[in-house]
Image (cartoon, rainbow, N blue to C red; front, side, top):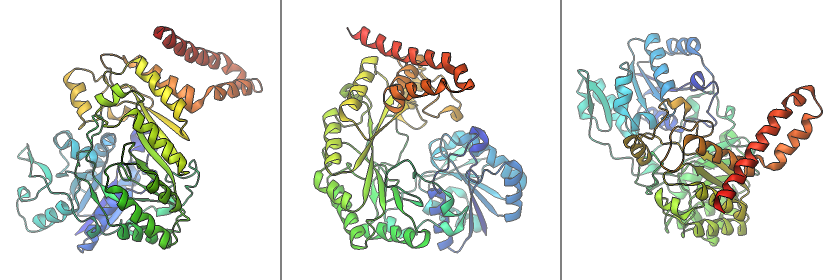
Amino acid sequence: MKILLINSPVWLISGKSIAESPPLGLLYLASVLEKNKYQVKVIDADILKLDKQSLSHRIKLENPDIIGIGSTTLGLPALFKTVDICKKAQLRAKIITGGAGTSIEPENVLITNKNIDVAFINEAEESIINWLSVLKNGQSFKKVKGIAFLDNGKFFKTEAQLPPQNLDDIPFPAYHLLEPAHNDYHGVSGEWEGIDIPNAVIMGSRGCPHRCIFCSNKTRQPRRRSPKNIVDEIEFNKKNFNINSVQFYDNEFIGMTADQNQWVKLICKEIIDRKLNKLGYLIQGRCNKFVDLETLKMMRRAGFRWIWWGVESGSDKVLKIIKKDITVSEIKRAFKLAKQANIKSLMFIMVGFPGETKEDVMLSAKLVKEVKPDRAHFHIVTPLPGSELWDWACENGKIDEFDYSKYDMRLTVTYHTDTLSRDEIKKLYEMLLFRFSNGYWYFIKFFIKSLFSKDGIKKIPTRINKIYKHFSYLLNIYIDKL
């Protein structure tokens, strides 16, 4: 039985590829399938920028019995398009889908595109093997846990599949089955000091026990790989791809629980003992009481260069509303400790939460100014299907845009709240960008450059107007507070 796994070509919808790193979900499935003696191929149609004709040609060339397509929620439009291309190219093939988008909205996915035979829900390493066995023996799909399908036109969802408990049992991602090659992905390198190409992406754990209202991740049960198994994979990547850096995809590599620090220290010890501390490491963290200086200092000795902190807001009121379960004082403490350990920090801030006001956004600005992170990134709050925020927004008629292709979190505001309109959310977001990402000097620099070219001179009125709008809006917020 021949299986072809495809990462949806999102670029056909958005106009640009979003694939920075290899599709880990598909590669883990491929490794499990190969272990169970199936013939597998993985094609990343997004980074390869395959159009309808070229993708159709590849499918005919591969001639698979089963086509599996992965996608995020925001990539569902591309997934549906890919399903249609696959069905026309290979009429006899069974088409299955998986990933976050399918897991969150299996009924919507199956009803929207009836060419899909089965939707896999959440982590599918065990359920896909069980389904293939049932398919081979001509048995009912209802015997398989963790899937959904249409039965005589009616939606049917089976009992949930318990996620894999021993992550060490799952083989490393099957990069040898992937097209294009591993080194064709640029990852996060380039703009992060110490994180150089080639770059590897690794998941040391799965699941998150926390309850943030904007998160659509339903896998609450945290599970960790053993430190040895994790560093074995780092060593594998170093040997086979000559990597210079590693990005951990864990939801929160530190700051989740008290015992997590011991796990992190054991990983660091393995890295140091194997002399892999010359690589640069980048992780995500949670600003809470569990972050400690001793662990951070050991991480720095092991080569950890950056922590991306999900701060979200500088207002304790907003942090409580979004169930972040951290405080502003804990945020300040985490950044201070990271600085003492000589680890650089990125602060993520979002604008437009329910109950958030202009004054709350100004508290976020105050926090950025006071903490002085090495970098700050800003996003527009975007309710995602499967999240508590989405449910609240739908129930209260707050969603203004249902086209997922516009859920970019940077250009389009998709909803409004009781305290902020779409226009106000956009202006506050742009104000933070103006102050901290681009900065005043950014605009002054481009204004000066405008004087030395014909095209620049033409744009002077537009640039002056943009600067005026930002300053006047910022001034109005301060005046309102007086």
